[in-house]
Image 1 (cartoon, helix red, strand yellow):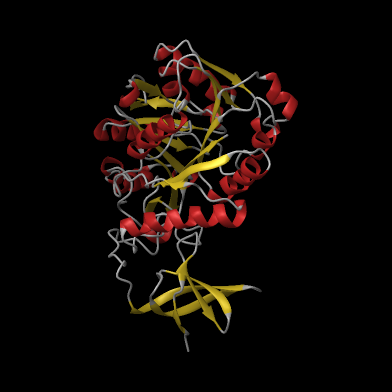
Image 2 (image 1 turned 135 degrees about the vertical axis):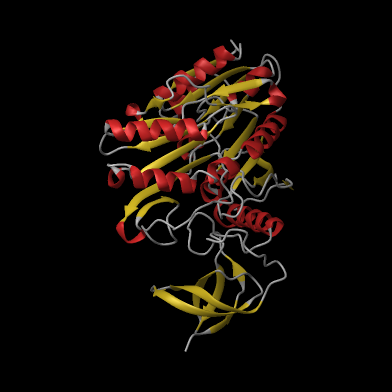
Length: 432
């Protein structure tokens, strides 16, 4: 007989939290305040994992999922929770991590940055597979807790134009001789062109190539191909197409990029996040500022537009080359870039970079612990804006900044970069 439980709260992945015989049980598909019949599918030493198979008392915040594939597709995990409640849950995750891991509390919780909840996603890696039992190709996200690809013909979070390409891509895969040798199609949407990068384990035949060209012409997309690593990515068809780019209109910037470069998936939220970061950083003409993990210059160039002298540091030679090109493209000679491994930062290495009035830090999920540990006790930057894609590593680094380096956590808040997922993007201001 399946257990019936009361859902006490949501965890940081958007699962309901209940107790079964005193044991914590994470329930997929259930919300805080609900009563649910559940089926336990995995028992661990300290917790259970379960699915909600019937909601006996529903939360007032429960919403009807917009996507017909929700629950099977692993791309979204929170469509059953009303959009504003999703954001509130993410804010609680941030506050909890800061308190529990960092032992810090911001003076001010910033209002959450909202944007479109649907059709927002301009980047994606879609899996592709030929499936004999389905009689053709599958293109889409993987199913929950599975290596299988969800049988889907549309996606509510991808941009509408890209969502409309899923079924035609399935049909295209079914016509190609190397259909079982195309594991992935990467999508990059710019302001003037959409690029599809086909990962090819086996080259197209001449007949395949003709089919792909016809597809690109019919759907007005550019096709790139990738034979091996990232350095093998190259345009396939058409030979001449508009350059991929996004813009930051508030700062008068255009940012060209390649389809495999890292850029944020949500254009509207990225603009709002850059705007907030610049207001918190408050760059002034003549100041010397560092942008660490700078990528293409998403924050570096807006800082430079303020008149400050800014140094962007990034570990990828290719990204730094493109950041320099973007600075030139936008006529910003006060933006400079160097290649360095910030995960191997040390106090003497940081000191060799010279004095900085302010810092912006935008690391990957692993955070910036070596950077914050390397900040000097004397002459340290007076203001640090930290943009994070993982609240746990932000909290870990905040503990060092506040309790070791003497900073104050003045403000923090979330940006809903990935609606309908449990991903928490956040921003924090540290001052001293």
